[in-house]
Amino acid sequence: MAPVHHLRGRDAWKKNGTKGFHYKSSSGAPDGVTSVVLQGSSAGKAIATVAGKGAALGLPALGLTPPITTQLQAGGNDGVCFGAEFASPAKNTATTLRAKGQ
Image 1 (cartoon, rainbow, N blue to C red):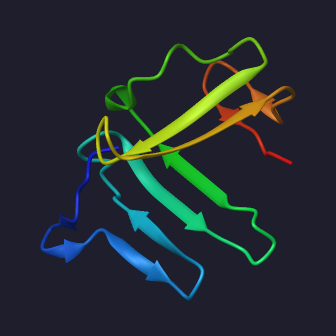
Image 2 (image 1 turned 60 degrees about the vertical axis):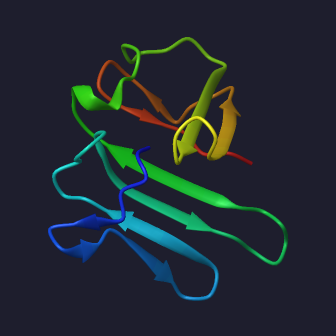
């Protein structure tokens, strides 16, 4: 994900209470990501929710063969990377991948 700080003169990233941040871009510019929610917890379990659309996402064709490894890399090649592996996604079709970790 590109390190975009402003979209149309407004901050794209905003603080989400005391536990996280969220990002919103209705157009998905510049890389197809339309929203990201990052949350921490006192139990040490982080939550990362990402939504996107269009060819700019650079995804393989959907309908993937599990286990599926996902990664969100923020800030280019030397930025923070979040990842998870999903053995049994809730939805895995030619148009949608929906999975929830443990």
